[in-house]
Image 1 (cartoon, rainbow, N blue to C red):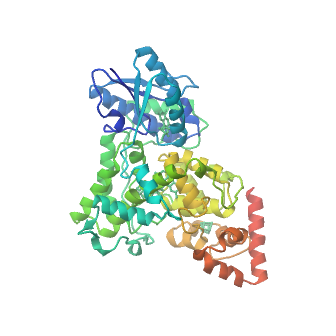
Image 2: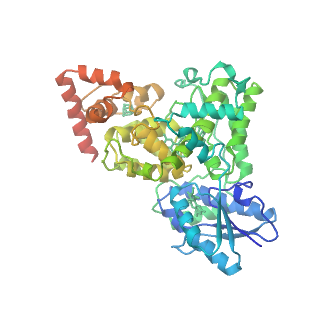
Image 3: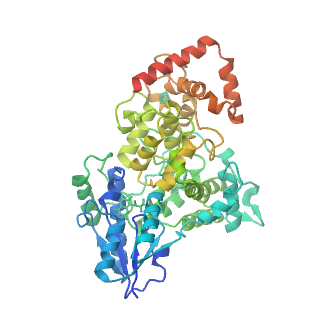
Amino acid sequence: SPRLRLILGDQLSLNISSLKDIDPEQDLILMCELHSEATYVAHHKKKLVLVLSAMRHFAKTLKEKGYRVCYRRLDDTDRYSDFIREVEHILNASGCRHCVITRPGEYRLLQQFQQWQQTSDAHIELREDDRFLSSTDDFRDWAQGRRQLRMEYFYRNLRKRYGILMHEGKPVGGQWNFDSSNRKAMPADLTPPAPARFEPDSITQDVIDLIQTGFPDHFGELDDFHYAVTRAQALEVLDQFIRERLPLFGDYQDAMRQQDPWLFHSHLSFYINLGLLEPREVIEAAETAYQQEKAPLNAVEGFIRQILGWREYVRGLYWLQMPAYKEGNYLKADRPLPGLYWGQTTAMNCLHQCVEDTRRHAYAHHIQRLMVLGNFALLIGANPAEVNEWYLLVYADAYEWVEMPNVQGMILFADGGLMASKPYAASGAYINRMSDYCQHCRYDVKQKTGAKACPFNYLYWDFLARNREQLEQNPRLGLAYRNLNKMSDDAREAIQESARIFLQQLD
Ligand code: FAD
Ligand code: DLZ
Ligand code: SF4
């Protein structure tokens, strides 16, 4: 008997588990553009274009392959509809009694689907998402009995399990990690290659018009959309990355440069997360480049660790910890997210630049997200719920399963140290070392307190003082607290006074 196959917007893979064993003659594939998905957070305009255009192109591919596809456009679906209503409608209309779905990436949808499974008259079959290299059960087993869940050990297991960058049971090159040779500041005369660009075709142009008129209030610049929207284009981005950027990926992984968020990063998260590229093939392409001596080991290992390590790890952590993970607020942070995150002017050049990159491209690279935007949110004590919402809606690669662990665990220490052994708090010196932002800033990164001083400098110490109760016992902060304790009363008061004035103005 015929089966309905539901494909969600981030499941655009021909070999997704919900399409296995499909009968092209009888079965029907359903895809739906939903107002509810476009607005449950007010996604960046470029993100909406990326997701909807990629969905439309994927539907076209499916039809060209001879599948029967029912595609519901935003203008066809009711404003208040959701996946369940759309599926039930088709089931009722067609008489089909069985719907196959690959488990959604977000907890809120899985929960809805599981409740519906209990109440629906039809058979709702949920399948594993096997595009990941590690299943949620694997992660649960690994996490069992561990007090801290360090990515590094999880990653080494996967390297061994899949034999990636391994030789006779040992890591290639004799070590697991080459970070000591990575993370250099970028020389001013080095010009990174231009990122791949794809001019919008008529399908993308229709979606741009739709978003322009339908979602004018959403954050972000819509002009100059040039992302890949098909698998063929995403493969071009991958190929270009491997040839042009991967060799220097490790060296400049942490560098930041004014007006250029792209640098030597891969820009592949958009496409891997949508399903246009499989993580396995991306890892393989990088490993092959190393074997063919087209890229050095420090770059290739560093890149593979991001995908095989971090990406799989955050997904495991998310499913292990939800729904409680969302509520974590270890440092009891409660400041509303300041307007500068939405583009309000700020004299802090690093923040201005990173928000501007984000507004224009729905992209910022990892260190901008972590050490500028994230570090600031941590130091000022921004409320985790608002920070999560911001990261989930502004980045075109953001889905809750990957966004939330990075925010709760990596930047805000809201999980109390399950992921990170200490908060990623840093003063202005780090930003100055890794970027050219400070050279163009009204503040002076060398001054510690006062009206001209870089706010990161006093906010850092103020953060440690404010969170003494939760953080002083952390062994990795021992030195920082000893330095804080050694300060004269005057110095400490000057810091707290500068922080008080700054934070008051911020609110
Ligand atoms: P590259 O630097 O080229 O890295 C290669 C790939 O590794 C990425 O494409 C991505 O798939 C993976 N990767 C790297 N770091 C991480 C990480 N920490 N977690 C998971 N995967 C990783 N990434 C997202 O895909 N979606 C998000 O919503 C997201 N939110 C983030 C929020 C914060 C606060 C931070 C600090 C990081 C976040 N990241 C997120 C991780 C990382 O910043 C992006 O994956 C990366 O910037 C994407 O650009 P790229 O493809 O050029 O990455
Ligand atoms: C992100 C997104 C958006 C903006 N719109 C849709 C949509 O209209 N239809 C759809 O099927 N999926 C969309 N998505 C992706 C879903 O929100 C995604 O499947 C969940 O976030 C689960 O990871
Ligand atoms: Fe940012 Fe401080 Fe440097 Fe200005 S001086 S760019 S605020 S780190």
